[in-house]
Image (cartoon, rainbow over all chains, first blue to last red):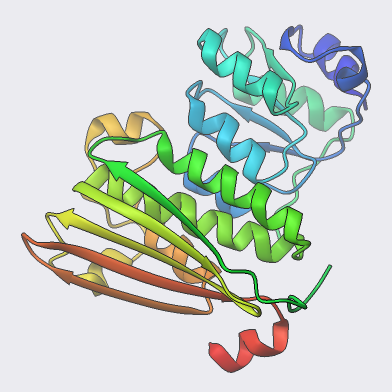
Length: 116
Length: 155
């Protein structure tokens, strides 16, 4: 499913990322609030779901080649973090939904986790 | 993608890490990753190196009063070294244990301090050496080989 479809499914708002970025497709998703765990398990081209909004999330997503980041619970990163997402071409989205509901809705649509 | 570099690049990247300079760790990892991608190294090797740098630099920012990170590119391997002045590690075996952490609430709130740093570094390194003196500081040396054969010889 495309990021655009993820946005609609999860009633999310796009913080950065143009139409071209939102047309990217996502098949794998990873949800976590620990940076070390992201560094350990985040697979390339995954959608990262997190409630952390600091600059580490963007660095971890960039280092691990994540496709996009979704912030849950209505959380919004600072403007500098959004700029960093833009600079690294990582689309950022935010939703009022919490992690469980995001994962549940995505799972229903066939999105899976990918832990080795 | 290459297992060894055809030429010997004399690349040494150095970064200063100040006390509580938390966000420099991700920047170091990010910048080294971009440099290594230009050299044409394999993605999984680059990723292991970036993870070691991220965690090692973060440890310096969290636990030391000052320190630096030095990344040296050799034809068939990379060495990552952090040297810091600070509290040091009392019991290295205990610190290596996954889940053991002395990090503060502030660090945990940031998404770190789960006691996974050193075990992540160990998992990504082919060779790892840590020396520490309590009240003086810590030196960490990690090595990552580019080819799988060298990796198994070195481990």
